[in-house]
Length: 125
Length: 125
DNA sequence: GTTATATGTGAGCATGTATTCATATGATAA
DNA sequence: TTATCATATGAATACATGCTCACATATAAC
Image (tube, rainbow over all chains, first blue to last red; front, side):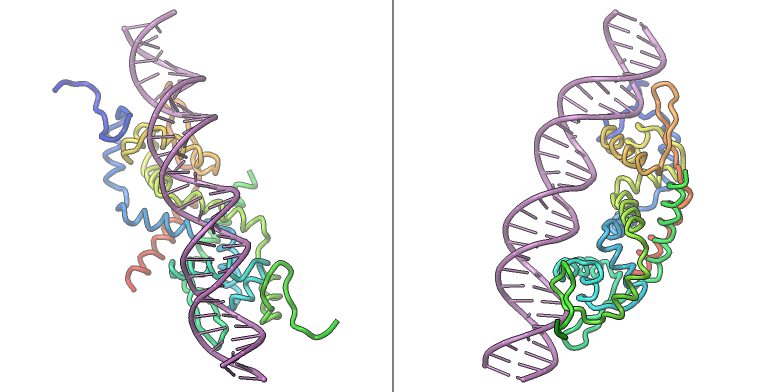
């Protein structure tokens, strides 16, 4: 043992501010939460899904309606609705052949609004 | 012309609820905003970037510190910091060889908090 | 039963992306 | 100058993802 600089395990860097690293490390949310958070934002990170969610802010809609509104194929919309279902952001009810989708979350709108505030501030600079 | 069902342009679907489609269409935010919003969430949709931002919530940090904290290579962190810089979510200052990064946004924390609320509610069901 | 319509889904393809590797740049120290 | 360290970056690779196409399923109408 000597007093050479500390190196991290899988990292090619010398620790420069060990105190900061330790303190920040202690205060980080747990791995799983951060992973889930990234997964949630991944769902929001697609224009088609954003549009679908904004459409559902305004009204319950069936798959065909959404496809027409966004001028996309029914198949593409159906695939994206599956992603939104898996993320539990939308729910649906069947009425004969038609499947109606609605929002299944109260936070999405607020998250989007905060996002838009960020975007508008960036633009005004 | 006849009274056959209306079909949308690039869509293989019959319009089922024309009134709903028209009303929702009128109230949609403009294309550009939705695109920008998706781009912002794309940046949040990666575990490494989420971790970097959470680290910067707690303290100003240099590249090596972040690499050590997350147990990743300096190069990987540097690449991701570039993405965060381009999204104007972080800013930096140089002090000799060392580059210190800090947050450049007040909304990110609130967006993340709302996201975590969503996640926790999903879990408790 | 058959036909038509609404939706769901698997495969394939094209594009995007996160990391690694090697190397470049820029600043300090010897 | 030369060596060293912190950071940046281009290329390559591996993997993820969004759409299309073809087809399957499901329900209703005939």
